[in-house]
Amino acid sequence: MTDAQVHLMTNHLPLILPIIGVLVLIIALIIQSNVSRRIGYFLIALGGLYTIPAFFSGEGAEHIVEELGRSHDLIHEHEEIAETFAYLSYLLSVLALIALYMSWKKKTMERILMPIVLIVALALSYLAFETGRSGGKISHPEVLKD
Image (cartoon, rainbow, N blue to C red):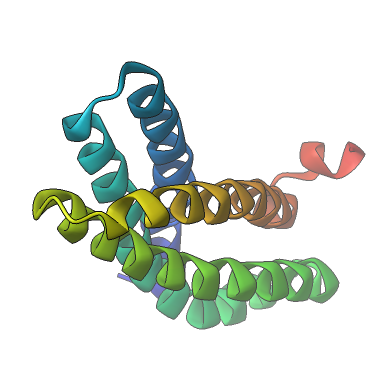
């Protein structure tokens, strides 16, 4: 299996899981559910875990698609946005795991972490959109129209 194939197979979950995690956390706030908060934290942390194979297969995928004649400028744009996304995703995953642990142990610190995780996850959701859009431009010319 090539890096391009690994990248294509793994790049969607890191983008969508934090967004789903944000929605679950917002619902958890509304219905005041500890279980829903923990699920939201878990989904966000899982998104960071799935970022690892997508991130590390990106360099190999870059070389393959450049050989296919894809635009180096579009690839570079995607690489820069994806790198920022990956590092923020890793940071957010650690925060979400800490918040999950605090929630599980019923520590008051979790109440402080919850809004931080939510705000960082919202920022990451925007970066997820930009990362996906810039990646889509590489192989989907119809996306270039926006």
